[in-house]
Image (cartoon, helix red, strand yellow):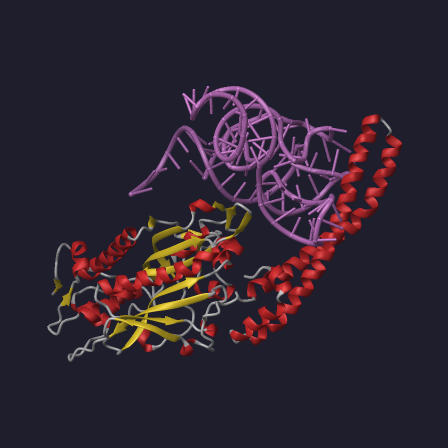
Length: 425
RNA sequence: GGAGAGGUAUCGAAGUGGUCAUAACGAGGCGGUCUUGAAAACCGUUUGGCGGCAACGCCACAUGGGUUCGAAUCCCAUCCUCUCCGCCA
């Protein structure tokens, strides 16, 4: 979400940005919202003037009444009443204008970072860097659910009966592995100076609107019937929401937090054959990191954040790469974003296991997250990144650590969380 | 879920229809005086948003409506918090 002042003063930059994102259909919105803004300010000004007059006259009435000059007071009253109709007309009109402006402002995309590659869709995302050698063993790697099944670690049939497609029962060592990964990731981030937080798993509608665009909300969020509550799609939602309406003293920044939560997503739309199993599901768990910082620091934190995820995966010997989101694939609220992808020796390609985003001041503007500075208050920048999100992450884990005899190596860093075991067999 | 109390600035709190709403009073924060230093005392200063080049104006007393020339104050609805009871991981 952009500042209306910015749009007013830089309409061409806003339009140029829309073109870069291949959203030509939104171009007319810019002039439309500028027109509405003008009308709004005019109506507001006239209404303010009328109110100023009313305030002044009302005080006079008070003074006249106090002196007991009732007739004079009655005259002044008439004068005030004369304007009241026009005033309520104006109030109605600018409330309407505001209502029209709101969705348009929500619809105009955030200005993307100059470093973002231009491209139409995810096919034009750009690989930035590989970490670790993507190996393909000379034995066949089974589908991940088959590996889990061999350890009696998953029951999708029962999950379908109980909750439907997109849910899972993890069991035994596989379930333990899942918890081990989450615990390890938590401690990994704590060691890097992040503060561990367990947030609410449901949030109010206004917070949802503050952290995501409407199309995302519609495609992702589950709503609790009869309540103003949504299940979070990621703890980013409740973690950024934590700062709603807050004015944070400069010296309390940056806020570097790592949070755990289950995540619930509708995952609207059709998905391919490679998205079966526990790849794309309605419920998963995630260790997340978020940062709230000064605007000038967000680029620094962006790099720092995705590197954390790369380091975490490398510590478990899983090859990864970073893939930069091109302009057309970038969500409207984001300035810059990259995916961390893990190597799949079965598919012989990388697949997404995490996503790192710099939202600039977009979320801060919607949620009114401000910083108290010496020269006044200004909007904060917000960032978020996945530390790790099993069970999807387990796909990469199992495929990369599978041995020819069907056992699974447990990397050293995870062993303390797995009762000291070196192997699942 | 039942009963009661309450929601005003950073916090506590006064105000119950008009020179008491930027908001008393108290505390805290910041700046200063005094002091070898500190404490104490004293003086000053401390909300956010919108419009405007500016002067300045407008808005906000949980939220949304209503009554009124004028609402923190009266009326209606909603939300939230606290205390007690019940239930419960």
